[in-house]
Length: 229
Ligand SMILES: Nc1ncnc2c1ncn2[C@@H]1O[C@H](COP(=O)(O)OP(=O)(O)OP(=O)(O)O)[C@@H](O)[C@H]1O
Image (cartoon, rainbow, N blue to C red; front, side):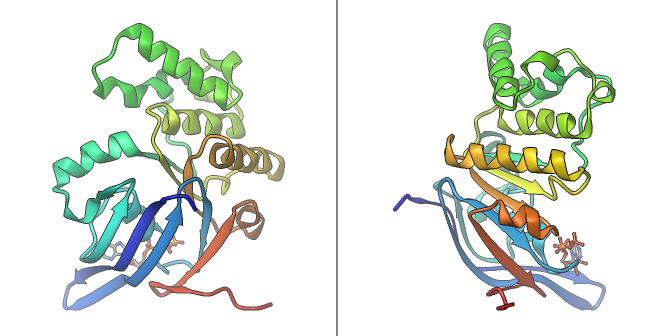
């Protein structure tokens, strides 16, 4: 049994909205083993993005414990969290969020600019990441010169380039046609099963969830077991 990449106990997030308390996540217990590809499903407003943001250190829990990649990130300050995130998490968005005036390789290089390293070393890491997603021949293309599926591959290379253990993906196939979506899901499967990345993917698409090793359902901030069909 592999060590868990994510362990949370009693994970709770609340927001004060005027006089009302909103609780997008309530007392969630979750273990995700290293190298697992996990899908998160649930209706709009059920807390999926809130959970992704907590797991990736973008936001902090109100209460509960949250251990990710060996660190208790619920105890880190904002500054420590930012540093932790840069080393441990890659984020993949539905709409890619590539910088339009930069080439594929320049987009992938962005997360490495924070770390002291030689140009040659950076170049080698960028080439390796683009090679891994099957785009070694598109290094100098700008986003407008790429298909949606290729843009998402560049975004995945950018998420991977600093070699994080955890990848979080918010609807990564939501804007793609079926064929491109299938290729992206196959790439995510390979990253988990051949490269040991732990992946947490939010999706509304049952076919995308089928590509994952395990699917969890959220409803009103609570994890529910999948209803029997
Ligand atoms: N910063 C915030 N301040 C106040 N309430 C918030 C905040 N962020 C989220 N919420 C509330 O928490 C609940 C869960 O939101 P969340 O974005 O996690 O849902 P979701 O499952 O990702 O939904 P969708 O599928 O529509 O993206 C919602 O009721 C939302 O209004």
